Image (cartoon, rainbow, N blue to C red; front, side):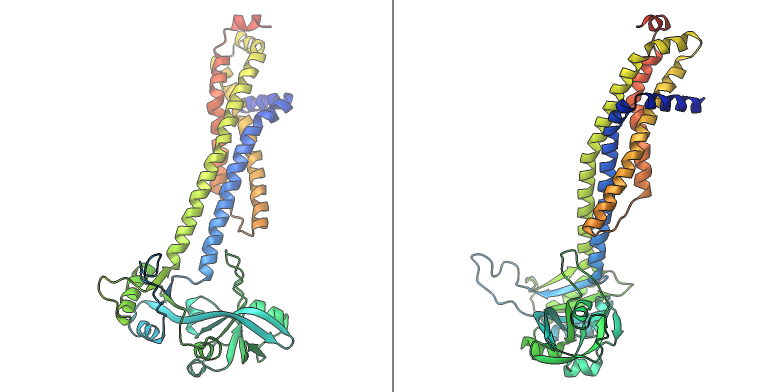
Length: 405
């Protein structure tokens, strides 16, 4: 009986195709908007996590900074106390739970090969940098301990630098000039692509820290110290250990303000992902309002349908149909109408999300659970908003219905 009712419902939809389409429109727009927003939001969240992960997993970044309340408006200006070899040595000697500890100093300079030149970020560091930042080599080898200690004129280059100077060729053994100093290319870094802020991570040249300090920077300052936690130590436990060691080596008194800053990349990733999820939820809630509008449209058209088919209802009641049969018929019609709108909306929403993923270069991350929820919600909208018109049709008096013109 239920299949016969569904067949009648589909025939009724086809009989008034334009009216049915206009009725579906609210549901289609609502479902499409919700599906598109949730899918784009999931892709954006995934991209944020991926971009942060490119910086290194379970990573703490230590930077120099002024103590709180110093050097601000109306306050005395205080020179930033840079990080140096003693902080690095103290962390390596006393910190437990770290997988790698690497210094880094960066500067934008001209890199020259033959007649070609490019502005690239030059980083002075050591081999632990690759471990701390989860960076691998596509070819070649990392710095040796003797090269790091002596500040040898060797370097690793990123994919962007390779493409600029060597195309798809092998740069191993070639000599490039960084600022006014020559260095031999001993390795090619695996490509990391762009960050979420549009920074090309592959436009980089790495050289031993001592060579960078002597040839490029002209000082012994360290801009950042990267501390990567091992698999058994969360960054939330590692951070206070790093803080205690740095406060001790920099002789900061109890109650004094830190003159350094520690950033937990895991917490930053979680915070950004949470903010993205919240914004997606808010936009989806706004989009879901059109589902309510669509439900009201279904109720309106079903009331019209009941009025138009009053005589048909009277005949069915007169020849033995029960009220529940009439109720089920109109409920099924409303549910089928809403489900059709939901299915069309899902297809349109996924298409829009796919187009957005290509345009915004974010992952296409549709959720089966969200799709099933959209289908179920569409059916529920039809049942809820179709119930009153169906009940009104079921309660018609057969004699009055037969008299209706």
